[in-house]
Image 1 (cartoon, rainbow, N blue to C red):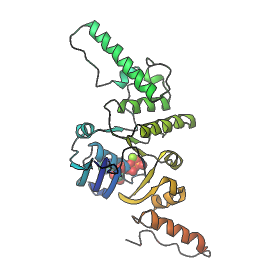
Image 2 (image 1 turned 180 degrees about the vertical axis):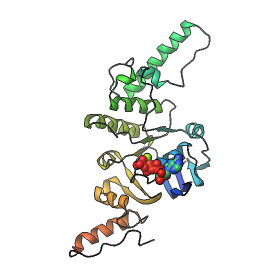
Image 3 (image 1 turned 135 degrees about the vertical axis):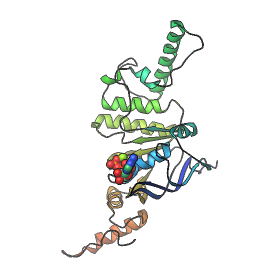
Image 4 (image 1 turned 90 degrees about the vertical axis):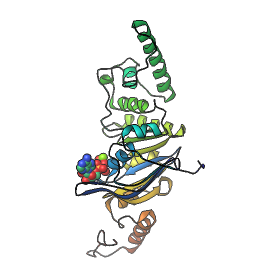
Length: 284
Ligand SMILES: Nc1ncnc2c1ncn2[C@@H]1O[C@H](COP(=O)(O)OP(=O)(O)OP(=O)(O)O)[C@@H](O)[C@H]1O
Ligand SMILES: [Mg+2]
């Protein structure tokens, strides 16, 4: 794999649900050590794209490459085996279990032999591993033995992210990780996402909050009505440009440059009142 080869690369991905074209020939990529913000209006296809990569809703057509090799992701296990982990919005944590048991839910460490002694050893080992993982990530929870139901939203989100890392993935996708979080909790989760990048993971983050996206993303990818509607370097773009791509002002699928040029032209034109705005989709 060459150094600038994306870890994960999608070409021409389409997905239809009955009459709804949820994804229409979408190209998308994420590299190691890169955070990509995936944005778009409700129903734009963001979750569908993540689920296509995660093997939950395999695409109807298109190509997926992993480290340059064409792969087929037909079920969640295929994505896991490649090294792709997903944290969904509902988190799927068990409120009545403590942090350690949530981290290892479904992948409990089993030593050879039976009986209470080996089970206890496993508990000790899991607690040790859990402690290492969470302190490496600087996750802030009161105790490893706290029931997850007692944690704050931000702490729960951090546990869910930590759990996704146990399989040592190379790409982690997060669907709305900061929705419903307060300001300090959001800050903790954003800091955790930055630490994933420092570990050289490729990260895909869906968010409706553009301030959050600008705070962490290297690149911002906009979906609109199932189509690619623009791509921006976060350091070179502003929120207005991204909003324009999300809403379709500046035309559908024309990319960041066209959108930016249109915005500049509009700003300098200072059109008199009553002038017709260019109609949406007129460039198709
Ligand atoms: N399993 C499904 N069956 C039928 N239609 C679906 C299914 N999943 C998604 N869709 C449709 O596909 C389109 C894209 O949905 P998707 O959930 O990907 O949007 P989204 O960008 O994640 O939106 P939001 O921001 O509201 O989460 C929508 O029109 C949605 O109704
Ligand atoms: Mg969604």
